[in-house]
Image 1: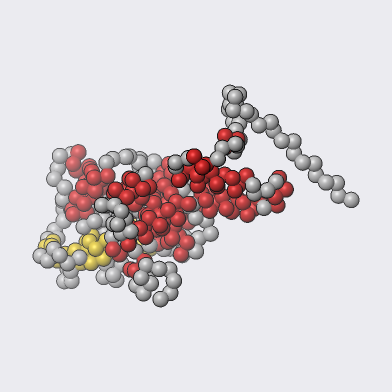
Image 2: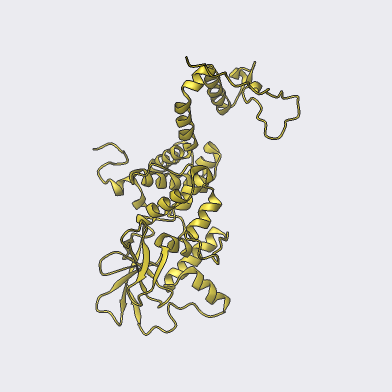
Length: 361
């Protein structure tokens, strides 16, 4: 005969009148006892009150024990509530639903939501990353919006490989923004010279555009600025490049997902090639992205995936330079700015027949 397991002895709940002991949690329901929301002016306060009341009336101890895993799943979904926020914010922005009651999206964000447009756009970008990882079939997903926003610097296979590497390295409770940034910059722990710094967004945008215009990484641009030498794409290059005179024509860049690839005619090539004004990437003869090689100064780095490896590394078609560091880490070090909102980032570009809906037309 199986002896029933004794119930655990409950710990004494501290009263509000007592000074709280470190590590103790006070009952969050107690301050609401005896209060009614009828006299409250805040719609938010009333909504939260009814949420607390619904949870308080959910059941007794046995109900929570029996429904533990359902409750845990519900908590995990609520932790990712920023995903729902990002989806709703995108629809409001896409349809300009604020136009009837507000003069601008900025006014709507600050007045109705209580957040800046930058914060709302960050939720949208984070939600896009979550959607891409869901579509890629990942079982584990980012629980923190700031981590998803950091991953928005990647596109295509780089995003999937970066997230796969993070999942293999960290458990969910270990994955902090600081650890993610350090790992993405140096996933194999061999390059301790890389450091993360914080600079103003407008200054970073100027640096990336100037580096892309000269076809060099941001780090090389900073080195030359510190040395008081004018930034040039390659000091020893014999190739003469002539930009496409039609500045209005741009191709779509698969790296930064912007319409920024411009045509370049070089003296040592019969056919023109392309370079992105936004991120500095180029395009090879096979139509796939090429990146700047700091060894030979050409736009010849391509992604290769050796047999037996889950992630791609980089190899230069021009000088043969190879590295063991994953491709996504090099792109992260170059410092792509988070992908901004543009017409090609909505559902209509991915699913042109869906007209803003996930349902089939």
